[in-house]
Amino acid sequence: MKRRPLPKPESRSYALLKALIAGSGTFYQICERAGFDIEEAGMESRLRMIFARGIQGHVRVSGILYELKDASRDAMLGIKPASQGQVAAPHFRGVVGAMPVLVVRRAAAEVRP
Image (cartoon, rainbow, N blue to C red):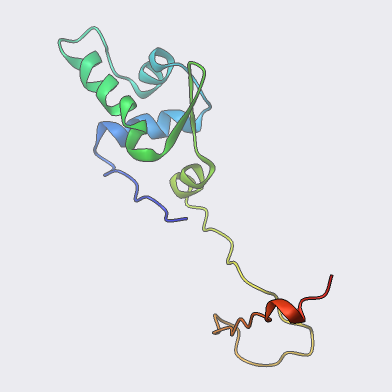
């Protein structure tokens, strides 16, 4: 799965994501946590547009609550994703790192039941 880049730190989207680190919430709760005054002329419609896009794909909606996706929360907190792949046996003494793997498929007649 491709990770989406975080919004620019000076953007409204980033401020909303920071507010979501504290936990899920409704549109109004998150805006309040982020320090936005939705009573200001045009602010509510601009913020609703940001929310409508899932705050650039970093948020999911559960009913009326918005919550930060796990990968986005880790990125906001600076947590690096765990490296994926097969762990070598203890006797492996080579260089640790990504290595090519050859995948061979058996012919249908060779597959065991």
